[in-house]
Amino acid sequence: METEEGNFIGLDKAIADLDGTGSYFLNIFNDKGVDLGVLRLRKGEIDTQIPHSVNEVYFVIEGNGFIEMEGMLKPVKRGDFIFVSANVHHRFIVDNQDLVVIYFFPS
Image (cartoon, rainbow, N blue to C red):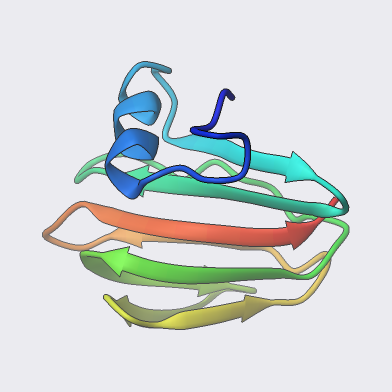
């Protein structure tokens, strides 16, 4: 993805770029050992991600819902940080609002 000035992109542009992909997530940065992206689920959409081989950190920037980790549901809302250990089965579930999450993990 092309970013403004190489190392900077505004959230509005990232969401607009996501809208143009037809996907529910978009990798924004993938350089120097770090992947960062945005994930947005709308009501009725299914998070199809599979466990990753590295630890991940998520930050909820909009909406509310749940994260299912190893079969257990935990509520998430705007402002929550979520740590998911490597190889843990997890997925987000939308409640009554779009859920927008930033994700970080080592590449």
